Every structure is written in C-alpha cells, then in structure tokens.
Amino acid sequence: MKQFFYKLGILIAMKRTSHIVPIVLFVIYCALFTILAFNPIDRPTWWVENATVWIIVGVIAVLYWRGVQFSNTAYVFMAILVYLHTIGGHYTFANVPFDLVTNFFGFERNHYDRVAHFTVGFYAFPIAEWILAKRVTTSRFVLLTYPICVLMAIAASYELIEWIYAISTNPEAGAAYLGSQGDIWDAQKDMLADTLGAFFATIFFFIQREKDINRLRK
Image (cartoon, rainbow, N blue to C red; front, side, top):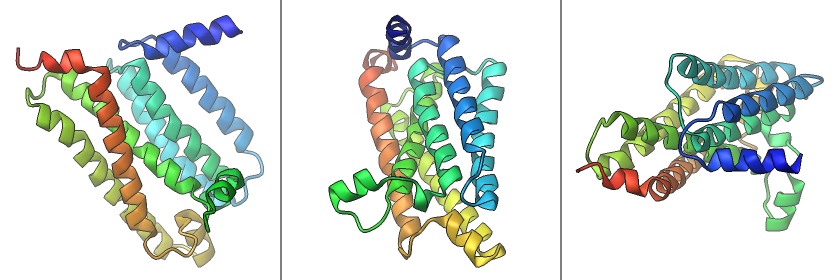
C-alpha cells in the first residue's frame, strides 16, 4: 500500500497526464459521494449542491473523453473542490464539522465555505495550462491575468445564481444553500476567496512551469 501511494505521488508531480491519476481521483469521488448520499442534513440543499459538482465532473469527463487532458497536478487541484463541495452538500456548508479550525483561530463562524471557495480558484491552474499548451498567447502578462479574470467572472456569476435560487425558494432552503451565517458581506468575501485561490494557483503554475513559460517568446 505504501508503495502504491508513493508511486501515485510521483505521478501527481509529473507535468504530463497519467490515466491512473484522474481515474483514482474519480473513484475517490464516487466513494465519497456514495457514502455522503445517505441521510444528508437537508435533502433539497444536497440536490442543489451536488448538481454543481455533477456539472463540474461532467465537463471534466467530457473534455477528457474528447482529448482535452490536463496534467496530473491540474486534476488534483480540480478534485479538491469536488471533494469539499460533496462534503458541504451532505452537511450544508454552515454545518460541516469544522470546530477544530474554528476554535483554534477563535472564529465566530464556520469558515468551511471560505476554504471551499478558495479551492474554486484552483481551476485557474488548468486554464493557464490549456492556454500555454495551445500557445493562445505569447504574453506572460496575459497568461498570468486571464485565468484569474475568468475565475473572478465565474465567482460573480455563481453568487448571482445563489441569489436567484435563494429568493425563489423557501427561506429555510435558501439560507441553507447560501450558508451566509448572518454575514451581510458573505457574497463579497466568497468572491475574494475565489480570487485569492486563483492567484495562488496561477503563481504555483508559473513556478512549476517556469521553463515552459520562458519558451513562449522563443
């Protein structure tokens, strides 16, 4: 077992795609989804939250099937949000057991949703990777800023979707879906978390792919 995880770690660190990594990540998701599909705290919220995950997984799977494949690192980055969102769907984001972090930092609210939003920004990594692979631009500035701007637009759009759903359903279901926990600036803080995650992922991409990026103008 230790040898398996060691080899898996080596595969994840590779820049190219190994079919083993996305398959293992997908199997983990299926297992997590199956376990957490039983007795969620709020079934309507579970449906809505998991619908988001199904769309994400579906898009990644279709792209993979059509030959648009990313690196192992990119798939790991993308899987983190899928896992966290699946957990959030079971408990609702405001009620995920996160007391260890909450108590350690002395927070007044459960910040699990902020962590999940931060990982939304991780999708800037595969966007940057695709731009570099297709040589869409030779500008390092565009390669740095475009993935971040895309994630900022997605973050804003998602907050609008949350708002529309919240006002079109009953107050309890809307509050459970939003997970704002009484914070009037929740949407803005969520978008900030998405953006910071995108900055992190893009900077990580530039560090990991420095040699490839330096060839842009060559």
